[in-house]
Each structure stands twice: as C-alpha cells, then as structure tokens.
Image (spheres, rainbow, N blue to C red):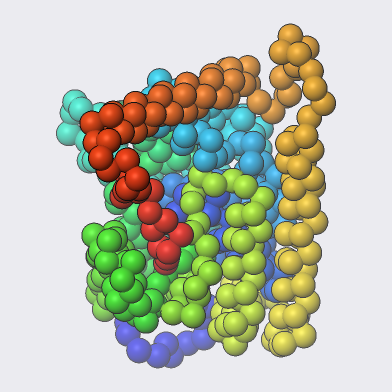
Amino acid sequence: MTTGSHTKKEPKHHIAVLSGGGVTVLHQLVKLVFTSSLTNKHPLELYSGGIVADSGSTYPIALLQKMTGEEALELFIRMAPEAMPGTGFLAKQTISTSSRFNPDMIHAKLQEILGDTTLRDLSHGLSIGVMNIETDGDHALSERLMAVPNLETGRNHFPAGSSPNLSLVEMVVAATSIPTVNKPAKIKGKEGIFCDPTIDQNPIFYAKELRKLNPDANIEMVYIGGFSPSRGKFKELFNRSSAQKFQSWIKGIARQAYKRSESHEMIEDVLDIRVRSFETEVGVEDEKHPRFNPIDTSVRQLTLLCEAALKDIAARREEYLDHANALLESYKIRTGDPGTAKLDDTDFNVALATVRQICERTIKPVADKQKAAKTPPIESAETLQVTDHITPSFMGSAQKLSQDVSAVGISLARYIFGVVSGLGSAKKEKAQEPIPTPLLSSPVASEREVA
C-alpha cells in the first residue's frame, strides 16, 4: 500500500455512500442529482470506486441503472406519497397490528425498470447491506452483497457470499424489507430469509474489499446527503430544559455519531482511504429544522427535504465545486476526455437553478393531486372506485382505520367522562377545584428539536 502523494498522474476513485431509509432518501438524491447536473455526467460515471447503499437508499441506486439522475428524482417524488407507508400507516399499526403496508407498487415498478438485471450486468462497484434472519445454519447475521471493481481492468470481483447471478431487484426488496412494515424476503441463490439491516450499516466492509483488490489506488469515500448534528447542536440539546426529558434519545444520537467517527478513522488510517462528508449539518441556529420522519410522505416534507438539500449545497459552494472538479478530473484521466473544462460559479448557479426547477415542477402536481383528494365529490360507498395505484385491501384498511379511530375516540370519551364523574361524586367538597392536566398532554413534542 502506498501513502502520501502519488508520483504518476492517476485518477482519484470516489466511493459514494448513501445510507438511510424512507422518504428522507430524497435529500440524498437531490444532492446526487445536483452533482450530476453540475458535471453533465451520469452519477454512475462519476463514482468509479462504486456505491455503498443500505435500506431505502438502494431505491435510487436501482433506478439509476436505467435512468438519468433527473428521471430518477422525478419518479421518486411522484411515487413517494402513494408507494411508501405514510403516517396513516403508522396509526393503523398502532391500533391493529394485523395490518401491513403493501409494497407491491414499488416492487412492480422495480421489476418493470430493472427486469432480470443481475450483479454481473453492473458496470460499477456496488454494496448493498442485508440482514439474514434465518434461524438454521451458520449464516452471518448481517452481510453485504457486493460487486467490487478492479480499478485498472474495470472487471468486478464478487466476494464470498455474493454471486454474479444475484438479482438486483431481489437484493433491493430484501434490503428494504423493514421489520413491522414489509415482510422478509428471499434472494434466489442464497440461503436464508433477509430484511433491512437496520442495526448494522457500515461501509467499511466494502472499503476493505476495494483496498484489497486495489492496494495502490488513490481512493476517497464520499458521504452524500443525510443529516449530522453539529457539536453546538449537541450541547444545546443537552442544556435546554425541555431536552432533559429526552436525554436517552440524545445520547443514542451521540453514540451513533461516535461510532461513525470510529469507522471514518479506521477507513482513513488503516485503509488509506480519505473520508469526505456532504451530509447536512444541523447547527444551533436551526431552530426550525424539520423533524424528518421516514414515513411522512406529505408534500410538506417532500418540499422541506428538497429545500434543506438545496440550502446546504448553496452554503457549501466551494466544497461542492471542488468535489465536482475532482470527479471530472478523474473522469478525464480514466476516459481520455480532453474536452472537460474546469467548473466555476456560473456552472454552479445554473446547476442549482436546474435542480430547484426539477423539484418545484415535480412536487406541484403531487400537491395538486393531494389537494384534490381532500375534497372528493360526495358518493355512496357502493359507487366508489379503487384507483390503479391503490389496492382494494389498502382501501379496506383505510376504511377500517376510520372506524377504529372513531371507536377509540368514543371509548376514550366514555372513560374520561367516567373518571370525571367518579371524582365529582367522591369529592363533592372539592368540586370547584380544577382537575389536574394529565402529564402526557403537555406539549413537549413541539419543543423537542431533532437533529
């Protein structure tokens, strides 16, 4: 392994890391599409070191196999409200655990786009994390299904546990099978039953395999998107009186941040791979920083996610320009492209405006559709027709949810009335004293800040 400066001119190979799930993946996708728009290159052409993805982040990576970045971004925004579990689903799960979100729409779209694509068909490196929950046999609990490139020949190597014949659709379905939301999945050619690796999503395993195959290559690992609380934000959360009630939650975030810093240090010091982060840092001044819920598919959150990504890009102009020029320089050396010019502020402004326009023109029809859905014409239950995008079982669950919510509301009202009546009859001498407000009704949620 070589360290320090490289004597010959060679490309710097970049590994893109996307981690996270649900609709929050949109934040990462906006940043990825911005870099693609700025360089005028497809994302898979830019990150020659490969892509590491887990959970919901595997969706955009799958889409990019057959689409441009702009097409993938537009499709994700259009599908999210109908294809992903929303907050209504969570409410239904709380009331009746027998209900399940139906991911058929997402899976059908993946099959339509990817078809029979396997790991063998990929022209780039890829690592997708899955968790094997099979109880029998000697299978590893969590593993990465990888195609690792030889950066000189361009040929992919498949480490133990992976196979060139593995279906990309089945891998994505397994990686996004979140417990309590989607059922575990099988992958043809592998023993076991798989689900989302929610407790173990570490890119160091791919970095180790890539370094093993390419001991002298100049490699950089780039974290795209996501949210990272600043040191000041951590301090503020601990010091604020309302945050004292959530210290265990805050400490959990701190442990995750420390674990990631350990991973970064190992990747840099042991594997000689530089780590660079383009995650959105949440500062002390971000009082109105939105609480991004991975199952909140509302237009409001889609808009906030896009706005947060665009705001972060604008605030880190020099960093993004430097990164984009490094990607183009690598592409120029690898392909012999002589016409690649250095990017400047004008290119940056055009790319930022382009991505903003994509977000706005795609979100508007979604907002109009949701607005129209809130004011439907009055029809009898017998005349209601199920749309092509929503299954009959989903509609049945929604109707039952309404009935369940009403039933719960009536039960709670009766219970409270009974308690109040009991208190009144038992303590007539204190009838004029107000009844104390229950602790759980205190508006602590509105004060809580999430990094």
